Image (cartoon, rainbow, N blue to C red; front, top):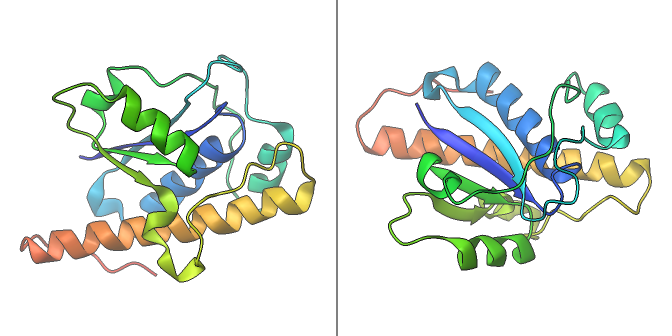
Length: 167
């Protein structure tokens, strides 16, 4: 079982979208990994709030329900409890690197590190944008999530563990 934490600033747009997308793709395309996926923000502006309604609506349009999620802030224990912390952009990655306690077991990456074909590394914050910006976030996090699962599959195969092929 592997634990993954998706991280953005406030945990109401990008990271809950990434959580929902990664959870759905892992369940349908890579159930062998038994991924546990969560999300959090580097700031505590929205702790306890549901995802932005525009994120919920965009995700529902693709069959992903984010309505039960609630925002939370990254905690020091996350660096020990999760295998991967996947930041949505360089700023949040820097915050994670600065907060990372000694002896942390978590690997820190940007989600789009796993989708080099996109030619970009940051998932833009759609908060001040329109519906098209939320759709772009979905496209980007879907590519990143698929690339992340492919990387896990490659590592499993390299280590001689069987891994199912996803679509």
